[in-house]
Length: 152
Image (cartoon, rainbow, N blue to C red; front, side, top):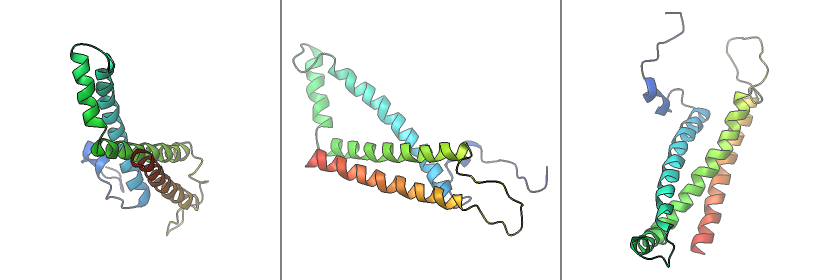
């Protein structure tokens, strides 16, 4: 084993451990994965949810009762809170995803320089942190806006 390299013993569990290294970019990447799973769960649930609407509200047979049952679940305070949460995570996931794409393309990484100890990160790292905070603020504002529409 090379000096300075450790063997990855955590596997996939390491994906969901934002504590090492403990910085804002790592936490944002952790929440990027978590919100991606949340969006996937919502899409799967939404596909199942909308499949109840095939017959419409004036349909006959089992679709009529499923339409009423589905609306009783989604058109209440809990259903609206879930939709507000979906707006929150989709907005954060989208803006943070753009930040990650730009970083992956090398646009927000900075030019390589001579490595001198102690290592000081590029000033572009602070730009990434600002974009993370922009993503958080815009996600909260979008959730407040969605809440004002659903509850206003």
